Length: 93
Image 1 (tube, rainbow, N blue to C red):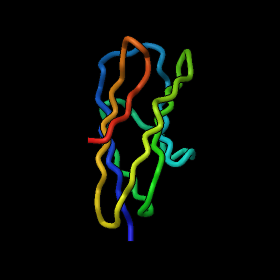
Image 2 (cartoon, rainbow, N blue to C red):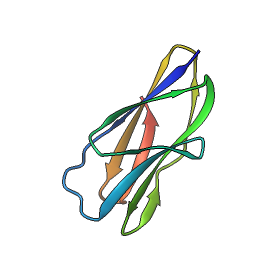
Image 3 (cartoon, rainbow, N blue to C red):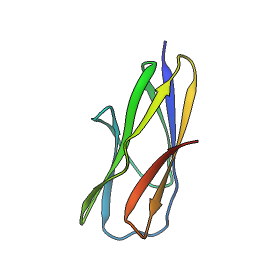
Image 4 (cartoon, rainbow, N blue to C red):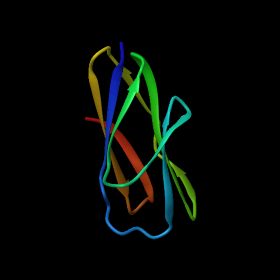
């Protein structure tokens, strides 16, 4: 069977200099994402590492969030951009 990770990425408003966001699952590119989006990732049950990489004037990485997923269940994550630090923080909801 399949487990699911859902990600809510809040929209911080107008940002200058950020060209691309990448959603990484277990160190591999899962997909490109945008601020203000909700994303579903289907994965095998078990332990996974989730991270977001921001590409702009600087390349920044969010924290690596380790999550345990279960078959047939959804694990919810929330990502928030910090204007002060210029990075994204991932937390499990």
